[in-house]
Length: 505
Image 1 (cartoon, rainbow, N blue to C red):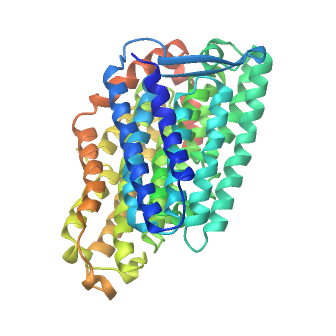
Image 2 (cartoon, rainbow, N blue to C red):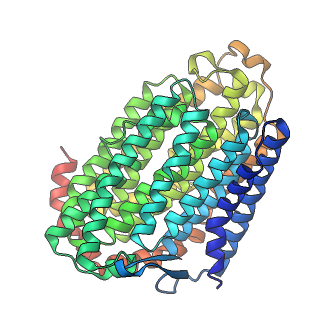
């Protein structure tokens, strides 16, 4: 194993962004060069990530590809990075979606393409650093760094309400992260270091664990988002350009779930058992509430945005079942959701770019003019619903298996996401793809080769995850099983009675 591989994967996008910014100037030639630099940089990062995947040993305890350099030794802070099975799958997800998002923005982002491509690469570096960080200060720095390119992509290249959407996104996320900063300082004060592996072995008092977990839940609950911390999500996802929407929903929202897992479920076992009966109902509320709101939407992109919120509620349920099946399912659902939701945003964008509208009432009969899109959109719609043979089914099945161990009522209520999701997604598909041809739909042309090149890999991975889930679960299942068993995971039944009462209200 070569530790330098992780540094390359983390900072190569930063080098690409700097190359774009240093050579930027006005003109189409500069924009064209920026697109190619961004694409080839992200493809190289993807190739290096696959090399890391091939060399990773899931049965080896502890982080791999580890690097540690002195940063502020007198304060117990270091540059400490490495990958375990959990962080590796999110590095792979980021590396996979970034070049596809760059490809999706090839034509749709025409103004200041240099800046947009640089922002996309900066976001990739921040995400790679976040998922590989083994020091809490380093994690916080990268977590905050994601805000800058993400907010700029929404605010500069977004829709008519882009300024408001960008401001909401920034203030909600930045405000929530202040609670994480307070928790970080408290942990440093108690342990004398911010090294995550050391902190994971430190036994904080149950009362302190509760206060620390509260800070992390508020911080990561905004990014997930947990109900009722979701007010920023519909506008941000809808107003952002398609490539940014794919990264926001596909990867950036997963940083919230990743943080809750890393700094909640796996670090504070006493507190998390107290919090679980309260977090589980919030996940169920998000599932049901977002589904009903999705029914009422007329903007196709907004339906997908609320669908994402609903599925993130399912992920929250999986995380706080506190057993290996539920947590494995939550991680798998995060991966599958990241792939499928990005694909759905790309499909909606392909139609909206041609028809110049996302209003479902103005669309209809698209399948007659765009059969290739209709076929791929059907696959992604079925995957979003959780049809067997797709990755979402595996994730939802594992979550429900974990939920049953806590409460049958919890499993039944969480399972409604599959039923209600089928309703609003099939209504969306019927309204847009079938029915009478309306407006300018009759003039539409099918997907170009470039658009198929973006959607085809997503389709392949969606089916791959459904047919052979072991390719991915073998990476993180040993880590989850070991950590939960050592943290008292089997004692999850102790929260069952409280969870039943709260989930059934």
